[in-house]
Length: 144
Image 1 (cartoon, rainbow, N blue to C red):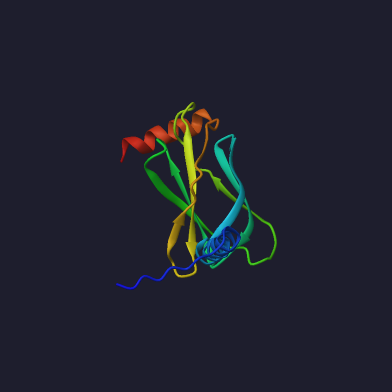
Image 2: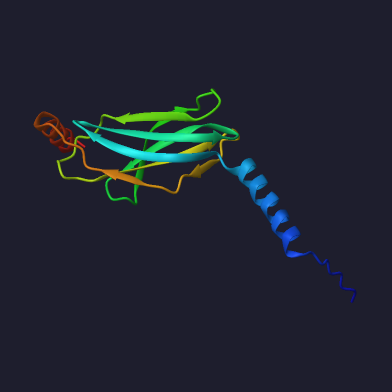
């Protein structure tokens, strides 16, 4: 059997792999996020993420969890069409659970072809909740 072997030096192999890696990252990656955080407020949590570049992206889905494992979709943020660095914000005003509870958040990229890619970082916070909201949350829970 005939065997064909291509010899390349290390520098050429490295350059070739770098080109393949960055090309794939540009085509498949939805965004490059430089910052993602959750800021606890009074009866709310504000999520903020900063994006240095976006490619083939339609928007972002925002998710919340009480255990860090089971997430529920809260909303959708469409892509800002401006060029350059962008800052996105989402405010979760549906925090009715008892104080001291930790809320976990994550975002997901929605690509132009409607495929979705989960961003690997999960942020967490514990907001302050007024007693009126706490009571209303308890009442709502009784009728579920």
